Length: 542
Image (cartoon, rainbow, N blue to C red; front, top):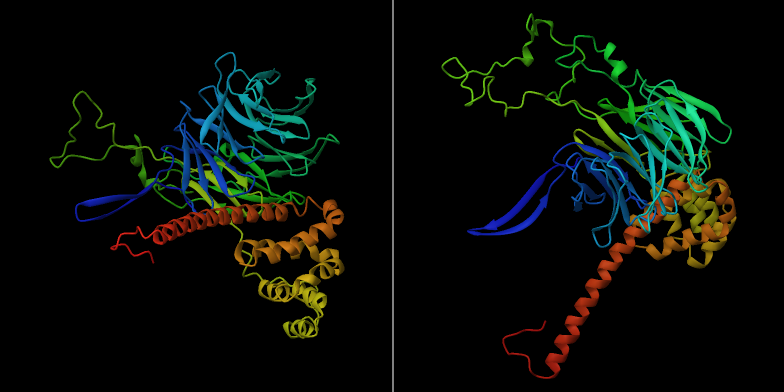
């Protein structure tokens, strides 16, 4: 999906009625953040606006324009009803998504420019890093009072993240610092790196952090053990093109490419990285290898899209593409009054494609990227994938249906899960009586629970049997709760999918109930009017 500017009107004859207007950011989109229920995306841009988009419709449903300078970072609080934004105008603002207003503005005693913002899991402490004073500021969310100014960095603070009561900050001074914000003990640990730090992110289970540096490396640290777990060299994965002004080869341009944004998946098995390139990459964390690389655009109207430039376009005065070749029909260009070098309003500089920010969806089924092209949303489509598990000669749809006919529901469900086909699993689930669900779930092997939960999450959003599938989920969580808790990090994306599906269903049912209530009020009112025989003769009730 690509966020763009569009508007629509509908009219007949001379009459015209307003239908829809959608407008994106006027300048580059610099940051992006998913809501905890994955139904909304907040973006910030160089135009000073904060926009919130619906992932279901792709439309922007609220825009905040209180900032007077570019927005450098946005962050969704864990409750999902508050969006935090940091700006170069020296303010950190909190926006309420229930009343659509700016209810809190946090500043420093001296004018500063904020580059990043983060919030702890409780939503009480807000932290922001600065680019000019090299400090980290912390506030109380409820009162907006400044709690502490953390000093120690010798360069601009590039990124912040909270993990287990600790605050981790990365800076251009080639260090990553760990702060104890609750005990106010200052810096507890300092990690020295080989180059300037551009981004830092914590894994979902808070077992490690990933730090991106200016030399295109991603380094993984275990803070509890204080050791380096692994590293990724991403210079060859960031494709470098030749700009019109470049005097060196594209291979030499790779030294100017780096990752500026990182995001872990919900289970922490992969990491998403994007930066100064038209590509963003997905890496396996454990094996530190590239899984896939995505190209943002092939639009040749942007600069640095070609790997090789035509040598015949080079002259003694420079590249032909940078020279003014437009002329008047008489052979000479007519400049504007008072201008000696032509019309400066004509655009002659093409922007370069960059990926400013990336983030994984909390459900793990999609991810988004804020790029020069706009907001791009990618999704995993597993409906057409046939991936059977433990196949045998007896594992067939015929044996599954034979087990259903003999009311061997557990055997039929295990066969369907081993075939790993959505239609067969749904066929078995919907034939199990409600009073037998608890017994089937209790006897189901533990290694099939994760795959069954994934199928149930898909049906929560697609099936009309909402109560029936909720009985399955409730029975699984009640019966196998202790076992699932031990593997909570592996099934976190599935649990987030349950929350997201239930939130979407709640909104749909609430809207339907409100509509039905208003319709019933109209029917009752018309019935009272008809019974009192005061209804005009020219009005037909039904």
